Image (tube, rainbow, N blue to C red):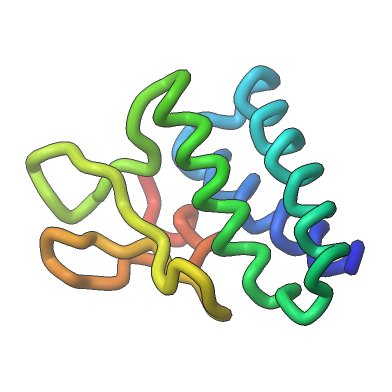
Length: 114
């Protein structure tokens, strides 16, 4: 269980760093979300493979409330946030819903540059 949580944290933190939103205040949002997902995973251990996508969505929701949309789509001129798909599933990706295209796996936004 801890390995799944640490992997999910590392993946989301990598995306935060790749998009320059990894200051201490925002990382604390990640830590808060992680503690809630820890409880969730204790209740449903079979859901370990879903934790990275859920954690990414949790952080995205928290950032929307406090800092605005994140991560912004690198494919479109009009600013909009990427979505996590599948919403509850393994192998989560950041997806541009406007184009219907996968942009990067959760944890791999840094591979896109900028």
